[in-house]
Image (cartoon, rainbow, N blue to C red; front, side):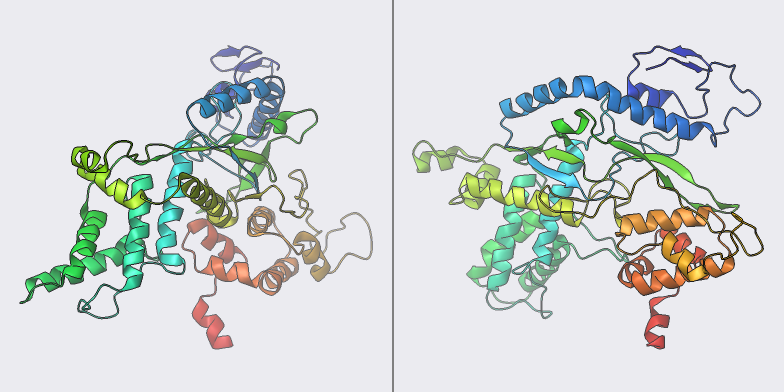
Length: 468
């Protein structure tokens, strides 16, 4: 690595890529000549070279040192009781730690010393916990909604099974944390349905007459799930790190330069950032520890156990450890395949799939968007210029996933298309990517709204129904 001149001095040749990324900002000079004091914060020319340098150094440093670092990490996790890793690959790009570098308005979670990207264990556990909870309302046999305003004579079988599953998840993760905010378009959380049942039970208690004994245990469980204190969970997630082969030999560079184009009052503003490339394998590890055991006399053990331990014994009794581990494995794979991790998941980032799943060849991050000449321009001197429809087909090919589609449209917004090509691109989006477009129209994120408005695609769903 070459040494670089900064406003405050010179960085040594063996500096950590993470230190370079977090402290060597993109407006610093990466050349030997004096720092440009006239426009010290002009990043138009310095940011691309800065991010390219960081990405190159991450690859270079880890080509020599990552294998040993990975081996030590894997051995440490195994000594702590971690299960064998779940190995998945990124379906498209991944951005973890988007807000970790506010000076650059971008970020990436990098190892402090070697600079390789990773997903913190806390983020993995949060995703896993949320997915497991949401399955309580999205899977067959989920917690049912109350069908009337009064409590039935007997607890519905579906409710009792749903409570059992909710207690299992609370035992594994320590709480039921998912909530739907009032007047939001978020999906219903299991807590909302459990709370509705608890409200019916409390209303029934206030009415004359005794509550059937069959309701006593379900009501006690509902009170614990809705209002009980959080406890320590049994699942620990470790950092998700790249597989050891990603830096070997001539492997593709793990970090790529990407672009986001927010629309401000003075127009679109392309923002370059780093992202993990598509099809990069990652290892995810977790530990299941603290399952209750009863080695002595069950009666004596039950007397000694506190209330939380008694509940764990009731919840996990009869469930083999191997079955719980398999369930967590399945949740982890589903969570990353269906929900994604990190930033920009609504645009297709952060999703992971099994290594065996075949994906289309990833579009090169170095590919440039070629803008056809405007009407009246001589262009390359050829007399027969391509039609606007052909130009749109070249600019927006078929088969792009939502992330690549968003990326391509943002690139086109940053350039100025002639009016006919602009119109054909919009028509092509409506024709080929209607399903993605329908999902985007239901989103309320400013970046998505601005993208649709730029191509005149922000028509509300009611207009579509009226046209049909």
